[in-house]
Length: 293
Image (cartoon, rainbow, N blue to C red; front, side, top):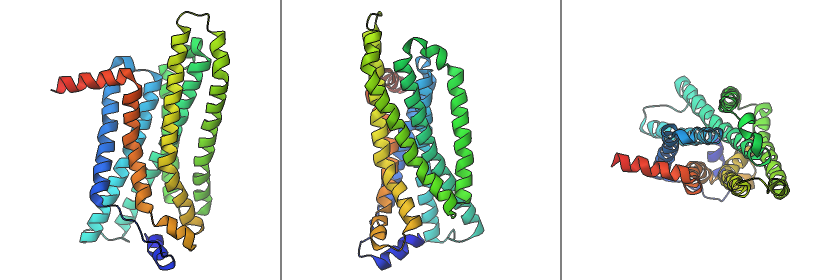
């Protein structure tokens, strides 16, 4: 907030403010949609597969991001009406906890996408041995490692976010992980056709290959949406840390609220992609709504 106030004095760009009602509405929609994903996977035993567990991990990350923005707006409202101060010890701890939740959401999304990409890669290129390689137990172990690492990292980054040595690795991690996933995609699509020819003689291989490629395309959509929603905010973090006094950087930082809204939109779009691309999830949603009626 101090950086935003200072930026108004060195740039002619007007700060774009998103109404609090919009924040709450978008955040609530993101939480409810991802909660539906979790309930659907829990209730349908046919969805108790590693791929859907990784998708649940991504849904939990999206829920944390929406919950973070909700709590942050409540905190700001309480400060405005005088119930909380902006620089007290309790408020500082509360702010660190919310920052930790935000970082946990970002890291959880990145590593969940990486796990989904790796799962799709194994499905396409090791289709005959997939169930031996990616067992349910191994998927749970992978998720436990991911969330343990993300939780520890988020706490460390939130506590030492004022140090450049902490900010730089955090911001570098985002493009590195995205680049790694992109390389995995390129390798996946380049070899997909040759791999399909090798298994063409097997029964139902064509249908199986199309299903796997459909999963890869779905993951590509996830990645594109994730980049569009999170990259502007990560860029904001970099500019706020390394060039807060530059008029051009300050002008970009004037759309901070818009970047925050994009993050919450990611939590809304992902469940829509799940429901649109997965017939099994669509069927489960229909059964859930019919039963509720």
